[in-house]
Length: 242
Image (cartoon, rainbow, N blue to C red; front, side, top):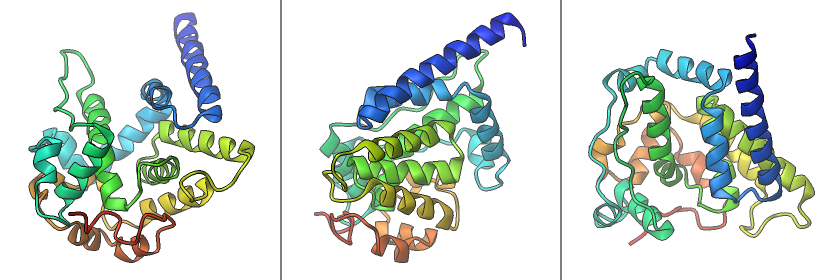
């Protein structure tokens, strides 16, 4: 390996190690988690994951056309019919003080597919919370990281899972404040990821924000699994929210 490439890899590994050390102590540190994800995108493991996604016949068409439909703001989404995907997703965004992300701008010379996939996955993160019934608690984020790792083989979320589990080993009390053991939440997320009839990344959510969340879950083959989810927020997981 050339010295310049070796130096870059060393710096990259040092950045990942610093992020992991911080997240093992405080897994809820969002800026640190985002930095770890950003650093992981440039790894060979992430390149291999992107190649697998682009080769998936269900996902490839979205990547080829850089699909990005209409994303209303949180207020507009929340005003959609109660029980719809948009209504639940809009309230989830509003509760966190978040808004939907704009389409990615791909500068000349950049890897357009990599940029698109990174932004698409990040934009869909909270949609997947709504679909899966995973709350935005520490345990809920761990579950969603399990789902993402299973479906995408994303190295960043795999590292986040490792940080969650290391923190769990050192945690004074189990389960955490959410009332759900992080290990069980991760197991649930992995099972969700392995159970969908079609990858979540392949879905064109924008074409049916008003569609009932229950219908989306039924089409994806997740209804029965979500009904026995480990979270204490209730079996409807936001589907009945008014």
